[in-house]
Image (cartoon, rainbow, N blue to C red):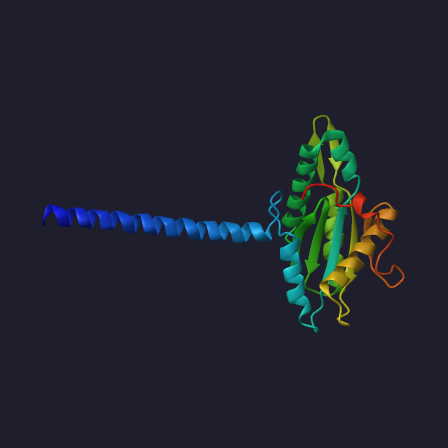
Length: 214
């Protein structure tokens, strides 16, 4: 083989290897981008977009029982104000680990932002109630140690079941949100949505809620 042929072969081989490496990197970057688009950067849980996509998919089947629970941490503002966002981040990650570690059946757990999480239960009210009560009990038993202080991960949880009367994902979440605020007013725990609560339950002003980093 001539020197020119050998050089051409070597150059072509190097180009092919470089192209394969570039394609591999592009595929990896695409997988990473897709993951980041649907997951919360801090906790690794599904984010609001992923939760809404999943909920829309479930609600498309009008015969399917679906429930949503909004989980809001109690006194989280105090932790951020007194100990800083690093401490708040530790609490959020601990809550995420607790909720995802329960491995609740037919349940998707995600973080919607700030100190708020969401559970989507692909089942009826009995199963949804059991799963949400299990989550509440697990959070009540969860603590985070920051220096010489133990912080509890107590939460208020609002639960709403889709009645499939042309209800949308936004409607269902608003009901769960209203139930959550009703639970918060009484000190925490689980509250189920009903007509008496209404679509909203005197939520704080926009500047007062979800003030914390996503």
